[in-house]
Length: 149
Image (cartoon, rainbow, N blue to C red; front, side, top):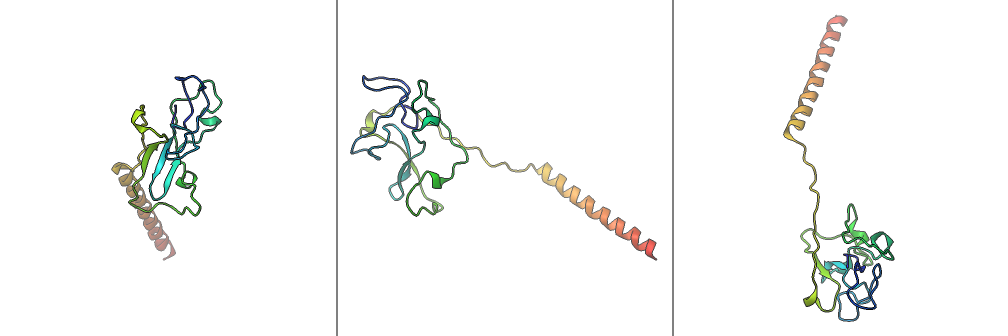
């Protein structure tokens, strides 16, 4: 299964590639796709990180085994009524939507791209450029004053 809970290869009769199997009671999210990756905590609840849709392989004969998110607002994942944000310091957990977690296998790799920090040479260059513009302006004003006299 991929992280959306879409079957990527069959291992048991009755299961089809590109389909989902809803998990029963006793799971973190009953009725949602078995094996899907959930994010949340006991206060917020747990929500699917990826939707079981065509973009993530639902109905495909060759669903992707790797899924990724980029630029997705948390409000689109945490669909609680009245969600206003997550407080600084809140701990989020990842879970697999399953009843028997002892027999789960596989992995999810979570990566993020750090925000770019300008190089010191860039900051120095911008500072020198600004200083040069300042000096040029002062020189222009000085020449104009001499011409007016």
